[in-house]
Amino acid sequence: MTFKLMTDSCCDLPYTYLEANDVDFISMTIQLNGKELVDDLGKTFDYDWFLQEIKTGGMPTTSQVNVGRYIEFFRPFVEKKIPILYLAFSSGLSGSYQSAMQAVDILKEEYNDAEIYVIDTKAASLGEGLLVSEAIQLKADGHSLEDILLWLSENKMTVHSWVTVDDLKHLERGGRISKAAAAIGGLMSVKPIIVVDKQGKLQNVGKVRGRSKALKKLADETVKEMIEPLKQTVFIAYAGDLKSAERVKTLIEEKIQVKEICLYPLGPTITSHTGNGCVAVFSRGEKR
Image (cartoon, rainbow, N blue to C red):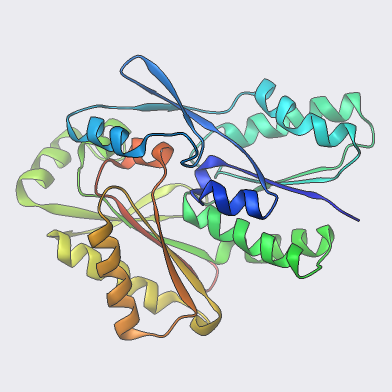
């Protein structure tokens, strides 16, 4: 039986990859300088302009996807009786997952036989993208919807995320660190080390002095946690600093051989909360 894979733009995979694999996505929206911008994974979004606005002090905000938009997103497939598997941005970071669940309840009242499975990935950016790409591969290999649901429930918590940011202002604005900590950290070149925890929330787990030590820490922790590296594709996301992402890739490759390391820009929705210069590494290990 055929089914439809769906996700949202917080997965940070290129829209061309999703289109090629018949995965539909719903876009997050961003507000900046009085404009509403649509995060469509680079299809029309002017990412270079967006980064420049942030560099010059722009402070974008984001809003969750509302119930009505989810109903519109799911309905065409429900009407055609095509089962849906939707991989959602972490409920620990956005209310979008709850909106999706409310939309499912409303559609099931209208269509008794609607089959919509919503997975809270408890992940963000290419951590979510990693699970989407695994689901794509499983589907391509002929696995059933039931097989993929089982795989996701057993493996989604094996996705590990190691993140550092270069500009503490955005973390301070989001309430992740205090104003005083941001000011002192900025003066002393302190770089936070952040993970996504079991609840799918950002957790500050350490700090180091200087950018190069932070990048080394991301690589070291990724290598330490990884299982079956030769079978793994590691994802590295970066906001306006490809050089740092390439540095992390090199540091990982110097220590361990992996199947592949893919570098993609950190999407604008996540960049709105981390600022320019964020680097994040995503791989699979033991359960969080």
